[in-house]
Amino acid sequence: MKNLFKSTRFKIIAIILALLLFGMFICAAGGHPETAQSGVVGTIFAPAHWAASKLSDGLDKITSGAKGNAPYEKEIDRLQKELGELQNKLADYNSLKSQNELYKQALELKEDNPNFEYVSASVIGRDSANPYCTFTVGKGTVNGVKDGNAVLYGKYLVGVIKKAYPTYSVVSSIIDPDFSVSAYDINTKELSYVTGDAEIAKYGCCKFENLDSSTKVTYGSIIATAGISSTMPKGIIIGTVKGIEDETTDISTYAVVQPGTDIEKLDECLILTNYTAESEAE
Image 1 (cartoon, rainbow, N blue to C red):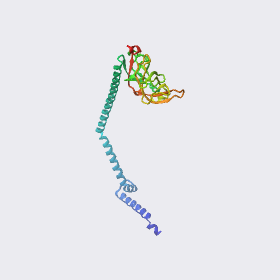
Image 2 (image 1 turned 45 degrees about the horizontal axis):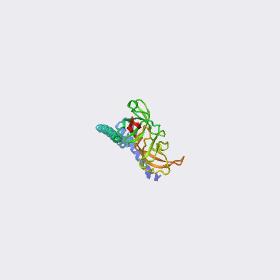
Image 3 (image 1 turned 90 degrees about the horizontal axis):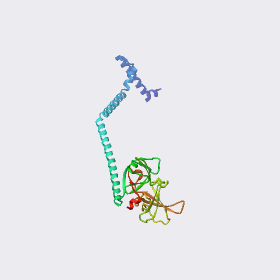
Image 4 (image 1 turned 135 degrees about the horizontal axis):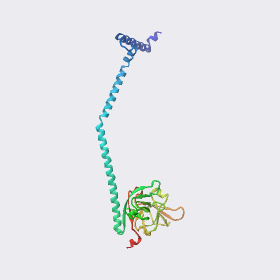
C-alpha cells in the first residue's frame, strides 16, 4: 500500500483530482453558469483552443492573400492570350513558308517544262480509316481537274486524282496498292514501275517492283516517273530507295521507296492539269 502512494501514477491522479477540485471551487465562488467540471476542462484545454485560433487566423490570411492576387491572375490571363496569338502567327508563318517552298520547287519544274499547267489545292479532308493516306483536296472539275491528273508537292509526285467532283477531288497516294506508274532509276536507267503495297505502306513507303536479281539499283537511288503514261510526264521524282528486298513469290527483286515528301502531313499540293504526251511533244 505504501508503494502505491509513492508511485508516479498515483501522483498524477492526485494532481488531476486536485485541479478538478480547485476548478470546482473557483467556478462555485464566481457564480459561473457553466458547471464546475466544464470550467476545469476549459482551463486545461485552453492551449488547444489558442492553437486552433491561430490556425484559423492563418487560414484567413492565406484566403485573403489569394483574393489579393487578382491582379496577378489578370496578368497571367493576358500573357496566355498573347501566347495564343503568337502561336497562331507561328502557324501562319509555317504555312506560308511551306507554300513558298512548294511554289519555288514547282517553278523550277515548270522552267524545265514550260507546258506544265498547275492548279494549287488545299487538303480539306482525310480518311482516318484508310491506311494509304488517301486525302481530299478543295479543287474539282470546275477548276479543270480530271481523273488521273498527277498530284505533286513541288517536284515530288504524291499521287493521282482518283475521282474528280465539281468542287473537290479524292487523291490516291503513291503508297496505295491501287496506284501504279511507270518509273526508272535516274542513275542506272533501269525501267519498271512503282506501286503501293499493304505491308510496306505501314512504313509510309511504296515499291519499285519487278527488278532483276542482279539489279544495280541501290540504297539512295532516286526513282522518277518514266513518262510512259499519256497523263504522267517523265522525270517527276517519286522518292529515294531505302532498301532492296527479294520477292517471296518469285525470283524477282524490288526496292523499297521512301516518298520525297511526307504525304500524311501535306496541307497543300499542286494538280498537274491539261497535260498529255502530245502537249509535251509540242
